[in-house]
Length: 392
Image (cartoon, rainbow, N blue to C red; front, side, top):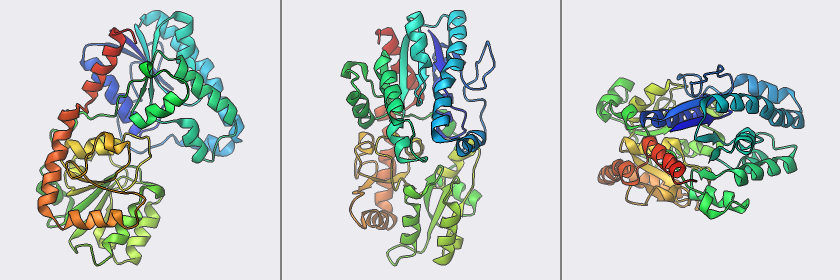
């Protein structure tokens, strides 16, 4: 099958992981994939997100531009980008003759829909978040709310199939008037091969100088709402065993505040931030975790970090939110807590960190989850191409 893959993402974070892994999975299944993306060379843009590399490197020039421009001007620039994307997509489509356009949804991005209407090529739209809602609540809000809502609804309703990453997100899509039969949930996945050579936990700890510690681990770009400050506060409490060590694999805007908090509580030697690491180094760090942390979650997300925790068989602590309950089952592959209940996270941590047998049982359940639910990029590629063959 010939697949024209379109996205507007240039950041080196979880978004690029999703893009690169999905393209690799489609190609490994024997499909031809032509990529149209910002900065990709023409006429053969056969790279996904402009190479691998260090995770967490956002597009600095984009953030600087957003800071300099009035919000309305920046949003109009996003809309105007469709002229560039449409030209590139039309050129690629006429030359490549794809059976389907696979587009990663972004706000104000309508180029795939425009080409679909012009050439009659089926459009599959991957949706990772309801961006009107997300950007209204974060990133300084939206200036052109009405235009943004129109663009989002138009993109979602115009696709032949919409692929949200959770059932919760599917509800947002359905609320915009997309028929249920055109909505197909395809969650984030994992590439087992990238984690196959991860060291055993004891060896991973030795490499990091954490021998003899019970390691609490968190991966990703840490922000204030992630709740890592609550983990540090708990570590300073009498309920926490003294051999706990927090390992944060990544960086983020609250790193300095969290390091200061640990220093103030006398925990500086028991909290480690790795900073931004190369993507290939992530498995060796996660392998050292005894307890994998998902203290909070965006309510519609399918967290990539959760897939990393599961594939390496880690005992997970996570909130009992509807989106996570699509993958996790309390006391089977995770210890879950009520996010609105005061002290629930801390109680779950105390229970798990003082019960080795429970950690081992949950770790086994976690390791079995990927295969049981087929949470792999290859599985996702097969689901997507099956939709095309079925005429979605």
